[in-house]
Image (spheres, rainbow, N blue to C red):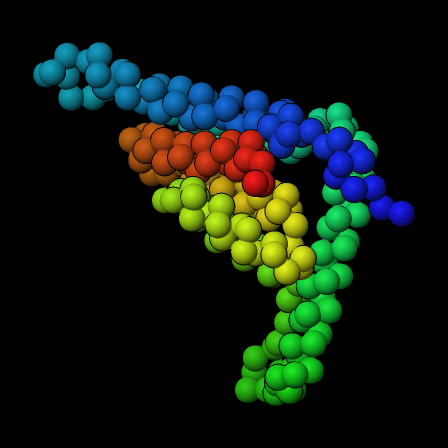
Length: 220
């Protein structure tokens, strides 16, 4: 018999993801410091000085270290909460099976063209189930940026049928926000000039901050 959330006495999500949240806030500070290493020398230079030496290395360093920092924090959180981790895996198997069943039913009902017809490969039932979760996370993350109340309402709507769990959608939303931030940092590493690199470091911050909010959010 699978343990229920009440039996497990599940921790608040900000406790469950405490190491990740701490790493995300560290990353926000590192992004700001990297941008400052570019902007501060420019601000301190005399008005008539044409060439200003700036520090580009911090932008490169934060870009290179970010993913490993977050992966390590996730692993530490999982190690701290093994019972919760086991319950989450069981919950994910349950909702994945439910999504697969719905996808299979839709496939039979729609009588779609054979795979490969007109050069288009249709997703398998398993792929459809994974896509549904990823899409839900992306949409919740995108809406949370502009209207958290609307995003929360969407979350309740998504989990109402039982094919998705609120926690796994929020975790997927965290991943979506983190990925957007990491892509900006990756672009900063290859930027053609220091100012662009600094701007990209700063542009990653709202997405990393959103990941903090989503990792801390408890479904209502």
